[in-house]
Length: 189
Image (cartoon, rainbow, N blue to C red; front, side, top):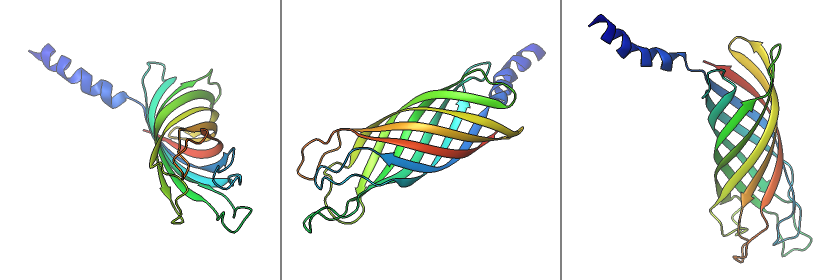
């Protein structure tokens, strides 16, 4: 009977030993292309995010996590009076898979990919898109620097695509691509 109790407790011990992380991110989004309605290029905007992740391999090199971030797509005023500034809020959630590449001496380079969903909102009351949502695909690479046993500093470059966002007239825009540079603090539990 004692052995059965020990076996019943083992899954709880294994779950408690699992590595979890929580990362707070701040960065800049650099969208490419231009708004098809105005022909004006998108401005660089700030990005704020958070990622919760867990290790899914014994060596803790493979991680899966949920990333949430908020940014906007904004333009300056268009070339004519009939082409006002555009401001679209973008809130994205994605499921990210990452792999630590040869970590050494407190420095861990990593690569990864994510698939998710973006919610779009017109921020300045103008109808600049008829899409309320879009699929989001991303690839990223970065490096983590170990500050302490329970905290890392991260630098990440992420390429993000919003798929099939529609113009205000209902036609499909080209996919909106942005390069994002992100710094973060990652807490390990």
